[in-house]
Image (cartoon, rainbow, N blue to C red; front, side, top):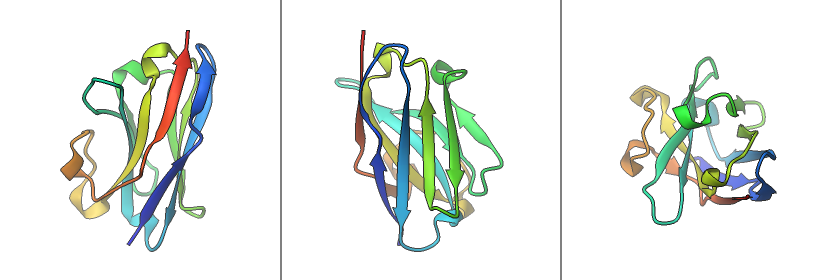
Length: 127
């Protein structure tokens, strides 16, 4: 069973950058598509980015295109979210989640669409 632990969150000024990491422990990280989701206070959780199990394809929600990128290193059992040109509206708890490759990749924030979730890391962007 894979377990996920996010890191890299923090406080940053608008226009700054952060790189989030999600480290997986246990077996078979490379069998999972990986996603990043976020939830701001008082708002529903939303999809941010996803990457296929081999890293061949990536998906980003429109609001982060051109600013964020997702990548993975299966040798290190880690998926990354590089966030540049951060805006105050990017403030949220960011979660990584895993969806087994046999289920196909989905650009969704629905809890049950993922097999595994991390505990989240807070990102705060000040204006």
